[in-house]
Length: 526
Image (tube, rainbow, N blue to C red; front, side, top):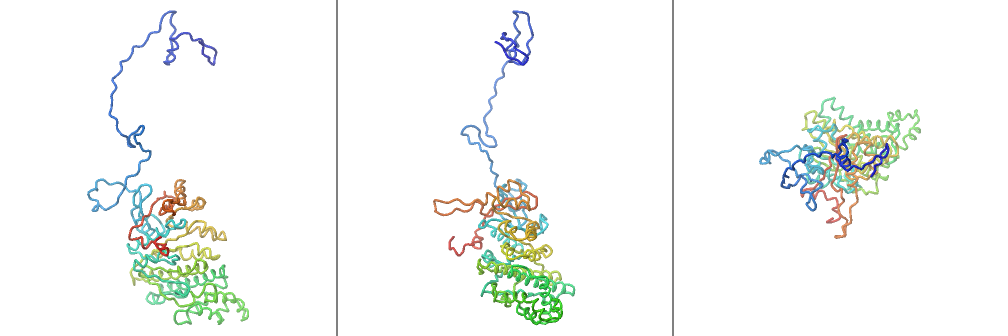
């Protein structure tokens, strides 16, 4: 027998040599006929038979039931008084325990407590008391914000909803003993020139604080009128028109005794006083002044009931806002087909509401009223942003200084595409800044197409993105009942703070919350 070797053919006719090679030992050459010496055999030790035990995943082997995934043990939280018998057996928590209890973490099972005010004020986890909530319709965006509003009310924070379109929050505010202001065609009026209690509060303040509060009220009214004109036209007023409006408002405050309305502002412009003609640059020609102010007069007439926005802004405010209780502006009477009126109503509610909060904070700074904090809910943000070019600046001016005002804020929309579908690149970048400036971002189920846009603002891992995409999966048909099953992602949310790992959480409603969270009330028992 021969073996082929890289250096040639080597004969192998010695069985002893082959046995030694199999043992990995080099054979020594011996005289012909002499056998290789054999090693003495080792004595075998008796085999120790140990009893079979289960591993940490269970019994191994065929049919034994070993598991490939070990489910996390259930966790409970409580004070040392509540769980005194279990006190020695404690474990560190993986989720923050400061704030409103939202639900259980989907990864560790621990309770997640989360709201923008508690995480900013007490836990020091975020630098800005605001949150941006994203998610497809029907997955519970309003529900998680209602949970936070309810919990913050228990902490002494007043939730205020500046424009409830469905309504999603009116029942909750009523249950908390708050104020629900109804607006709509023939249902209520909101005067954007109403300074609220600014003048009465300013009379109680020192000189410097008085000037600051009155200047703030003047700026809000000017911004509100310009915003309504933007919604009506689809474009913002020109610089000269805003200057005319600014001067006309100052003249109106000097001449008018009481609270003016838009009709009074129009009358001042039509009177053509010298101060207005000067800023209009009519060059001493009255006909030129009429030509310059013609479009402005036409827009104001359209806001007095003769335009598509109706008469909701033409009359005195039907119900002033209270500062010491939860408040909801219910604009659900406005039909979804009237998108311009909806956007105008939201902007007017925001301006009026933030004005009332400024009065409360000015009085608290002077020691004339107790300090109050507010949780402001701005739902359906996309409706305002799409109503006209330049409205992003108006919203940005209203929402930028929430930390200095002692106000927590929740801004809600469906997808990032709502913010990036604006006509100009400048507006898109400003709208994107709403998400970037938010202290935390809470996302429900979103389609895969949204992930690149969201990831450019809030860094997410691939596992987090897959989880959010899975939550947007459509529900399966329940053939046993002949109806659609609940969506897989119903009540699931991802809480992200900057570049930190996201916290997936599931929100379950308590029996006390079921009635105030019924957004399908008009469908009977649905």
